[in-house]
Image (cartoon, rainbow, N blue to C red):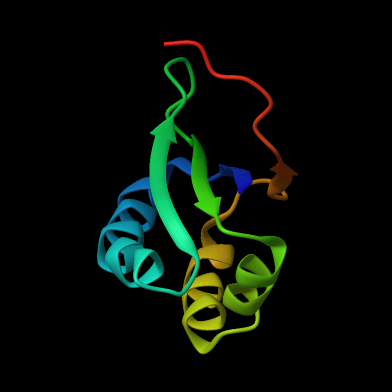
Length: 98
């Protein structure tokens, strides 16, 4: 499994627009092949900073999504709202303690 974390920083006036875009597309992304989880987090100290946290069966599934019309449409609406360049990490889970 691949875990993908993306840090997104928005202009304050665009926060509501981003939240609307995420709400409209979350289920579509979850329905995309290989996506098992998609969550959105917001920084406690800076409400303009968000993180998406997703689980993908493999890099192939993430790459397929990133080449899809769904990604291109969503990204084109989202990228105009940024206040800083997004950062992304693809990681593997090494340990979990409950």
